[in-house]
Image 1 (tube, rainbow, N blue to C red):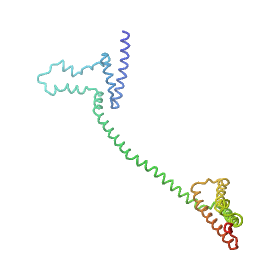
Image 2: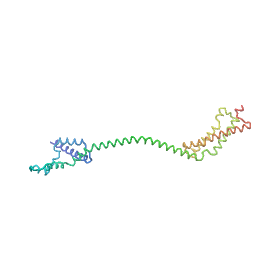
Image 3: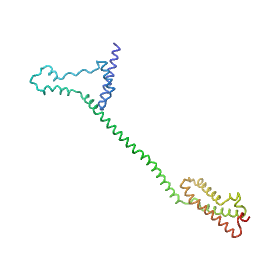
Length: 258
């Protein structure tokens, strides 16, 4: 007896919880078949859980106690059916309404989901392709702007470096005409171009160490185009001019003398 009473109490608690859950689902316009199955199982196993049947309406009692007159019209006989239809609880109406509307809502959701997925498949590739192009174009524009800005800055070569390049070119020409053979191993190493490269390397090192200027790619391109290349041309011109002037005075390179 104690076990049956405990089981009945547990069933009542579970039944109340399931009824509250069903009412909450009905208020949200949804239903759960698992909850309905558990409620039916509890009602079948424990008959005492079922709610007591509602007392008959006064109209029913009158209709059962008083015999119906032979002259009663069909409209009066149809009144109990209308009362029965009115006596249907609003929860059952809401449950039926949700059951009838649920397939339509699910179909609408599926249609909306497919449309959104199609729009994403059509839109995302174009956006993915546009982002790298926009980034690349922005970097190119910034790069050319920095080139334009660096090209209008003051030259990093300086007058003293130009004087040093000219002096070294004249000195190499004198060495090739007096001491060093331009065709020898040492003579091929000591050239005006090599000394000009050393001057530029020293200048870049001074810019980096003393002036604390970080050499960017646009700055290096501008330095090569507007400083290094013209200085190399100046170096070759001064070297050849020095050899020509010394040739007028009878001083020629050592290789020509031999």
